[in-house]
Amino acid sequence: EIKRLFRNCFLVGRRFRLAHVVFGDKVIETSTFRRQPDETVQMADENAPGALYQSSDNTFGTPEEDAKRRDFTVNGLFYDIKTFEIIDYVGGLRDLDRRVLRAIGDPNVRFREDPVRMMRAVRLAARLEMTIERKTYRAIRSHHREIQQASSARVLEEIFRLFAFHASAKTFRLLWDSGLMASLMPALDHYVRQSGKEQSPLWDSLERMDAMERQAGAEFSNGLRLAVLAYPLFAAALAAAGGREAAGVHHLELAEHCLADFNARFKLPKTIYYHVLHLLDDQQRLAVKPAPGRRIRPGRAQQFADALLLARIVAGSSAETTAILDAWQALMPASPQASRPPPGVDRRRQTARPDRATPDRAAADQPDGVPAESGEDADAKTPSAGAGGAEGQTPRRRKRRGGRRHHRRTDERRADVETPAATPRTPHVSLPG
Image (cartoon, rainbow, N blue to C red; front, side, top):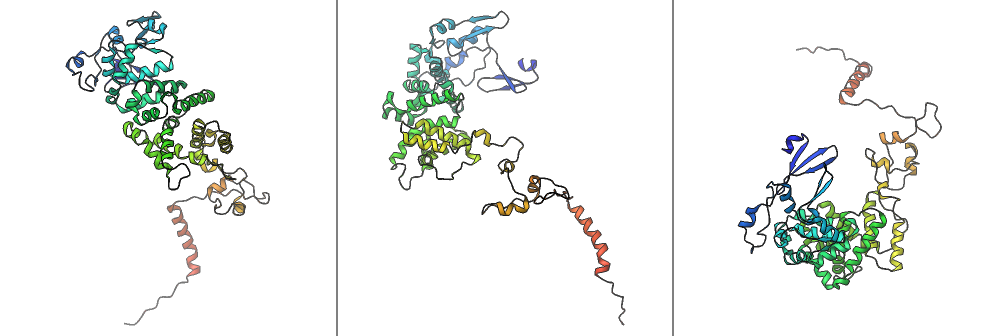
């Protein structure tokens, strides 16, 4: 019915069918009212892991039934755009005033139907400074292993959302306290338990990242955020291998080993995966002062900027370490985005020197090992001068017509003119017999 109303509508989703109505660059996500599918709960064996997990959720219903099948009471509120009224079927306004996050229905059943709801509870409670209702929190502690039944793509998306709104420290602390970290990231959970639990250095790194994001007024990339989580494991593996200066230590292999379990679980996109690897590998370079004349290539400006941010996040209060990072920071361009050429501009022309010499003098001005520019690119950069141009300037060359057909006709005309003069005819001689 929705698709018949809008010609620019596309139906998406398997477990939860949605209608995406496209208006230019915007996508309006539309869904119908749904109710709880009763047959799943009746036929499921509650003792089996993942028994109540719903693989289909497309049973249509009334607005009240739709409100009762949502996750939390504060998410079950409706707004009537005709009467400008808030419709509350589940007591969400009362919990919103009390700042309490309460599951709709029995949380032991609701969290097993959709385990991602437990991650949403942690994220909303930490970000909005709400208190998880006692029964709801006990259900998370009891059924946190059910999160392994959810789709890895959905869980990875929720992990990225845990960093949003500069509340990653509170969110991951609650994630660890509720037991969800042990099921999602067992290696990181083991590190937290071995490094002081509530006093683990991980919380300080996350708090420092939140503060830097607030100061910058922008959120960091997902690769940098995952690198902050993976760095404690990377540092522990580096210390076990003999330290940063130990011979035969391959930092990139250590980074791959630290990310192996997480990547096997959630199948990170390659761009994010390799970005995290290079951020961890670049930390060894940032521990030493840059050599004189060192420059940052424009193509690596954004990656190196994230590497500097990671180094500042994990750095302590040592003045020497800060001085080294400041020396590297001085080599960075004014803005990483400024180093990228605008769309449609050739990168070679974007990075060329403005005082490029003419093609005749380019060979003398070029450093050793760098060939002088020639061809159409050199002609385009040379200022045009007339027939009596200034000395040292080369007039613009007229572009010749190319093509095999053009050159063949030219060669034939030249042959007709030059053949009589170049090769005189030989008189015909008849041989006897």
